[in-house]
Image 1 (cartoon, rainbow, N blue to C red):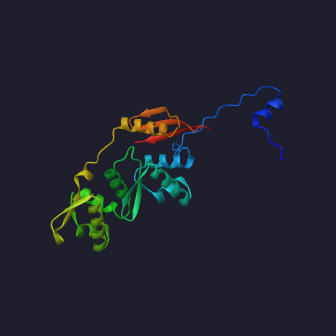
Image 2: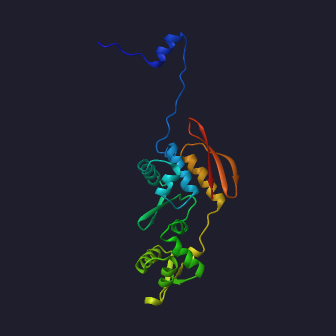
Image 3: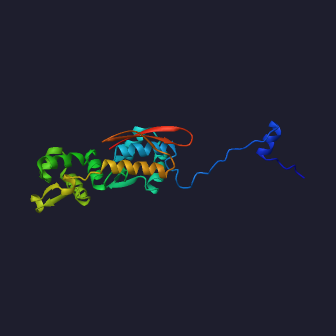
Length: 227
């Protein structure tokens, strides 16, 4: 019959010749460790500080392999910590804590090489036709028309007139984007880390910045958020 192995506590007491009190370890609550992972924490911080960033841009700035980055983004979006914004064939990432969908769409499209020049031209002139845009940015009419159709579908631009007399302008929501209350953003950010079990502590704050220390249970990290 195989010999029964003694417990760790009993082995220690026998070796040390005295009563040993082992530390009580409380198991972490399930479902609160999405940001415990260092890479996911970096991804969240980067998206929060640059709402509307594309996955490829995020990969270049963080230096995380694309396959790994996609996995971490999937985990964060499934948990509701990040959100995806559809931009036609591309996607932008936002943190719902601070960013509003329409504002982020406009910001993300402005940085896009295809749509940014069109939006800026319309904003500068208040309104423009397909022909004016085509001439100014040096793109084919079919491309300009297709991009304007997509922008219109996303609520970024609206049109008046018909045929060759159609003119485009930014919608009212694109011209006057909403803004989040910084105090509310800070409270929601601290609440998120608390829910994640990371014990946040405010180290520094101003009207557009918040620096926190968070306790991962292994070490304390300092993270900075801008808004």
